[in-house]
Amino acid sequence: MTEKLEGLIYKALDTFKIEVPSWGFANTGTRFGKFLQAAAAITIEDKFSDAAQVHTLTGSCPTIALHVQWDLPRGMQDVAAVRALEEKYGIRGGSINPNVFQDQEYKYGSLGNPDPEIRQRALDHILECVKIAGALECRDISPWFADGSNYPGTQNMRSHIEWFEAGLKKVHERLSPTQRLLVEYKPFEPAFYHTDIADWGMAFLLARAAGPQAFVLVDTGHHYQAQNIEQIVAWLLHHQMIGGFHFNDRRYADDDLTLGSMDPYQVFRIFHELHNFAWQTGRYADIAFMIDQSHNLKGKIEAMIQTVCTAQELYAKSALVNHGQLAILQKECTLVEAEECLRSAFWEDVRPVVRKWRKDRGLPQDPLRALRESGYLERITADRKKRGVDSSATYA
Image 1 (cartoon, helix red, strand yellow):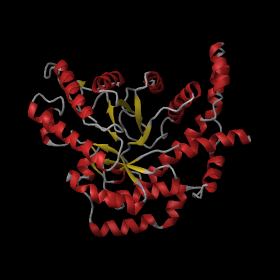
Image 2: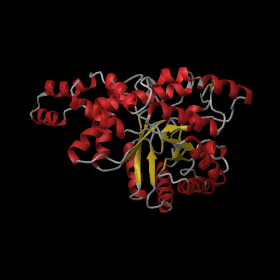
Image 3: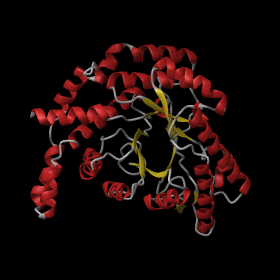
């Protein structure tokens, strides 16, 4: 590999940051049950400790996404404890995630619930999350809504739109000048007839209606089979409406598998759109990269390191695309050459340069091996067995 290409990889990796989710270290499950792991995080301090290990070994994860109901169950009263954990473990709280889908009151929805008292309850919780984010100096508030219905005729879909528009506008009014509201979408599950924010277009319109600090959050598992996610990214980039990603992989639906385990070329193509946008405009879009995965069978920390390392490699590959040459080939409609220009970057083996970058930055060249040789997994397994197994997390 030429010195120029190595330089592109170094530049890409030096700027690449991806947030890990607190819930990715805890015991999680599916609709059919929860599979417990002895090394799974029990407390929020366990989650900070595990996240810090991932950052120490990969160099790319300085923040941890927090789920308020699971990580700050007392709300603002827990902020001081989180601040102390930030200081102790050397990583910061990242995106703040409200929970308006778990409690029994949300059986028929949250901001889209026909009961105005429950809509207000959901709104109050999200507004508290905005306040928590401010106290922790966290920029992004990232709610996910399970609202919808399972049977035709059981809900008024237009009323739901009105309620969501009104609720998100009120949330936007409480944002500080530095904060953002990220509106996520999902086509189905748990609602199967209609989901209130089912696709990027609905999220786009709701974000636009909420205000200028609201953007769309793209979860790579929240699409129908074979949907062209990079085209969605291109549209959102064009309209300056993409705020962040939740990265994971899937085989069928929202499987929450480790990134790239099923379709690494898709992740590469998404990253390429971001690099290409920067080449065309002279600036990178302000986008938060976040992981959202549920490791039910794989070891929690090992799976997270797998994903981060894969993300680093695919981001590095996408930085190698010759955008100038590709633009010429696209304009000339030279199809095979254009496709090969893109594919050649994907097939480039960047792993030796990534290992070299890690060594030069004082990081272990093989993060997964370094974790296994560190003794950390054995220590936390013994400690957490003594303290008991967490049974509170219900994320699926």
